[in-house]
Image (cartoon, rainbow, N blue to C red; front, top):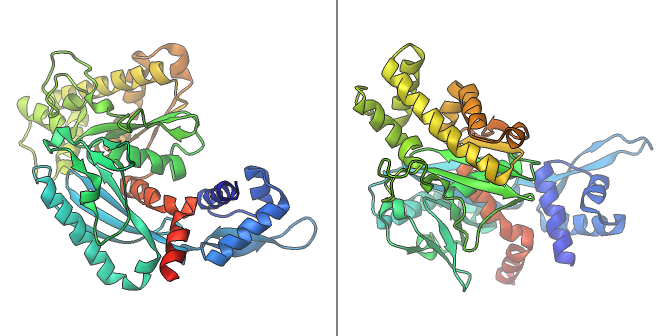
Length: 394
């Protein structure tokens, strides 16, 4: 029970950024004596600090608590379509450093594993002094990450043509490794610190080269029976339609993934894709906005598919908030948010649609890596990192 209380208190401090003992009593629901003892322990561990004070009605200043940034660190890795990006976060969730190894989706999984090790080694070389306070490496991976009966994890990246890969193979420099799907990592970041914060029921959709989703139900990330829930991009929205890279026909990703969008524009007479998918997507949206009928037709079709997909989720899940992220999603929300809203409403029942807000991701670049780092901080919350560090020190 004490460990549960410690987890609740430390989690609230991390989420709040700054708080007071009185606020913790009210939110966590513990007595003054319990809060005092737990906070004292956390300060002694070096993960919480008194970061200032506030005036009070009684005249005596009230101490303000916050995470101690140098108390612990974690790595978050976005293993995605453009290579591997590993970011180093302190306990205030601030990015300290970043190392990126460029690549593409055609690389074999063995090369991806090597790229992760290269990036982690570079960060260790630059931050050797803080390495003992590292809780682990969080991985956001491009496919369902299944939890096995023995607690181990396996990546199933069917869309990339990879075999099933034990997550342990991604380990780097003997760090503890924690993994999840990239879309769920984004959803975790949005749930903790972003556009889904405070929502008990939300969907967080990711549009990049691939399409995925994280679902928040009753304030928690929904995982499914074996942790592969959220493969929304491979729901068939047009049976018998375009072939998807997963091998099926008519998937949402086959219409709303970056490659699918740009290939359709090229088929309709648009220019060949540029080396940067971002530049090509911006060019498409610019052409649509300036009267290019073919470009406008491509964008309208994408908006229609996304609207149908999101509308179905509204009918199925009744979320209070729909968050759209990923680099393609952010471009579409910047240029087409009202059109997306109208399409979503057209494909959903009036009442649940009226109860849902459509918002862009709070994070424009680091959501996936941050979500992965949050995974790596979880041992700090449940006390296992503290126990491990004590054992090593002893």
